Length: 446
Image (tube, rainbow, N blue to C red; front, side):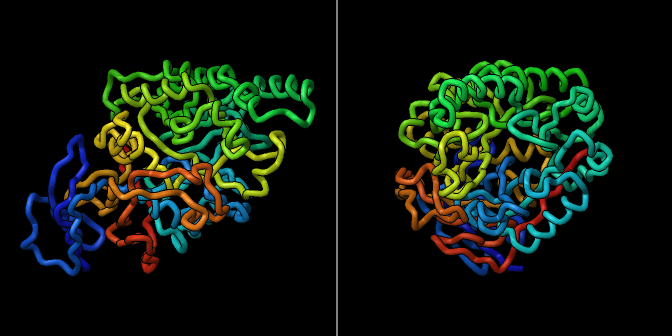
């Protein structure tokens, strides 16, 4: 097995930043030490002045395959992820067709095994009428069950209270949900359409997909989870009020109800709509600066547990439509780690905090087998970051299939120098090595 020796790194892991070396053997971390320079290796990497982090685990992405591959696909988006230091992703079921059967779920795993440079897992999708299929899910090899309790149409929207109770009382592993109250959104939308017709301004988005819509759905779902003792994860929190739903007085491993914040709700607020328009149209909507600050504070005091992207590419042409016609979502997975490094440079967060929320906590929360930490015997999912080498997001270095980013023109202080995926040097100084693919994530659940 190939051995690789990383020397002189500033290792960020488990609450500490310390100088040290890491020896990789095959897919795993063989040794961690203060001085491993005498150890033999096939390749030696001098990481002087650089940060060595566990690979980022993104628990919410939409890579659009099958059926929507004009927007993105597993191959293209996984490459972009790896270039950004994301070594593992969990992808959502709202493809075409939606993942409502075990057969369709298996097909996505087969695509990823052949094409994904990053490690991968896929959520099973809940509908109003596929309970029996959902209950066939192997919880040791599938990250969880996704329920759309808003922001969807047709069979993707699960809005029958009896069906929801059945899922929350029965599914034996993690349920993740998109929480927005669809009835509230429809009423708000009708009011704005009556006033503006087809010319509803983009600034209306956070008023249509309002804070009240988020609260009604999130509080209802959290109430269900607490009633049935469900392992429940609320995705992309976007309001200050919702942060009150979550506790911070117990260790993450003991929490039944957890929450996620997304890069766009930390990076943007409603003052950015005038400049960026539908490029920052997401569901739930980017809201006020007060909400933005409250989300960061809830991360800092551990009411919110993980940071993800909700990476959801659309074509440039699709995004150029009017507010009413432009789809919601945007690409972020290539730049999530660099964006959070900016908060570090601004002294809003520490490096151990970043690693906890983007690497350690997703691994703990989903009970992922031997990933998310720099530990001997764990998979060598690692990222080498140059914290003082500037990087500007430009058209010619955006790797998403859609070819654009809401962060285009942003200058970061940090550059992703290298990414190892299960020991494989998948990204090195701007070049991919695609000779090996990522691994399917597995989970240690009782």
